[in-house]
Length: 466
Image 1 (cartoon, helix red, strand yellow):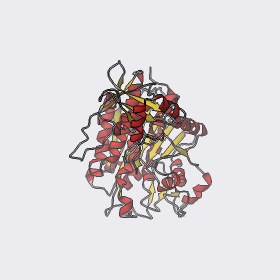
Image 2 (cartoon, one colour):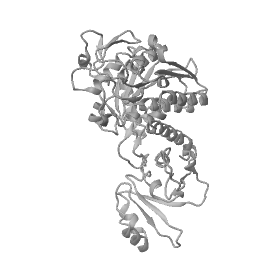
Image 3 (cartoon, one colour):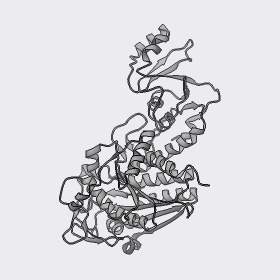
């Protein structure tokens, strides 16, 4: 992928094709103002005033054509309103004819993302460059586009080349680039301190040994923020094995780790004044003679005992140990990302990550930030009476209850048991995947809730450390 910063450039008056924007309110008047030749050309193209529609306007000479594109509101552009154009226009340089692109530069950048690692024939059509008279916006949008591409790349990559070693290597690269400290606890060394991470990952071969990856960055006297990401590199379901159809996309079960790592990179790159603690519990939920079993009782890092009701409810186990470790540093905020439950997808579909939080003010802030940056989310309840649904007869709790109801909520309530009392916490149950393409958002791995959370951190902690 071309670096996003090269896809939007400062407008210095260079030659560029104009893009005219119209909406429902301006369409008729704009059309009436065009020449008969232009109206005939648009009619021949069957140009309609509907979302993402575009048309080519002929000029006096063959190479003087321009573009018209329909948007929802010409006075309030969104991240995605121009994102179809890079896929339908030829390579070249463009500028909006009557206004600045504003937030639409992000969608212009991400629309040109390609995952072509395994393709012999690459997209070689060349970049579509958009000009802006506000060059100060380019770097911030490019940083978020790179973070989005990182999530997409990691999730799209098959497990054979995105296992625990590769996630650790990616974390190490990001740590070194930002001057952060990285530590890793792996394999049998997990057994005493992080027994649930160890249990979930111990059946994988030695090359894919489970591990807890920790990154620390920032001044000790700054507010502490912990980011936690579920990193199950492949989920067979364990001994409660998934059917083939359920296993097909399980390369994406490390999507939470990809989100947390990309968010940490954004925080460090922006120099936010926080003491950052990133925790990535990473494991492959494999099947072997030493795999953990239904009916086993695991002792967690927190000391709580967990009866295994289903080995396919493994993500909450590794997150439980990681959340406990995060809480030991007494952060003022913990945010975790996880591809945790199918129940969240049944409730909200693939586009909306489910947000659970123990703090109403945080929920309101996140909802506002999500709207501001076109990165939607939806809050679901931490309904305390449902704690009864994962009671165990022989342990402190079960990792899966007998009830088929409220699966996303009960999973979130399980995680809450490992978050310190009075610590503000948000949990994103995300799909990390787009089953069908949308303009600017190709089918495959996807970052959901990433920009909303980064925007919240920027608003809470300021733009840059002193």
